[in-house]
Every structure is written in C-alpha cells, then in structure tokens.
Length: 82
Image (cartoon, rainbow, N blue to C red):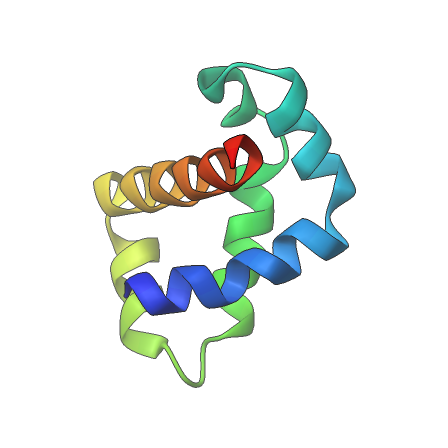
C-alpha cells in the first residue's frame, strides 16, 4: 500500500494547489479539516478498478479512512520539510 500512496502523491502536489497551500499554512489537524480529505476521497475513487479492495476498506471503516488520511498528510508534510 505504501507504493500506492507514493504514486498518488505527485499528482496531488501538482494538481491541487489549494490542498498544498492548506498544508503549508495550517497545523496538521487544521489541514485535515480542509480540502485534503475530499482530495483523498477523489484519488481513492479514481483508482477503483485497480484498487477496489483498498477502496472498500477505506470507505467501509471510518478508522481506516482517518488513518489513511493521516498517512497521506504525513507524507506530504515530510516532502515539504525535505
């Protein structure tokens, strides 16, 4: 799953400046209240044919959903700090 997350990250960075600005200008907790969860939802849904199992786990379990969103945010923050 880690490679899947890393694969979607460059697309999010290039195409969603709103999310990246929110991450850059807010705490992680505030960023999770912005557009990031919706952007992640869209990325997960877009890969439904290839990653249907991941999608079902993500959509079917609020804890998995929140954990996945946090992992993606942490990855984006790590890239920003690098």
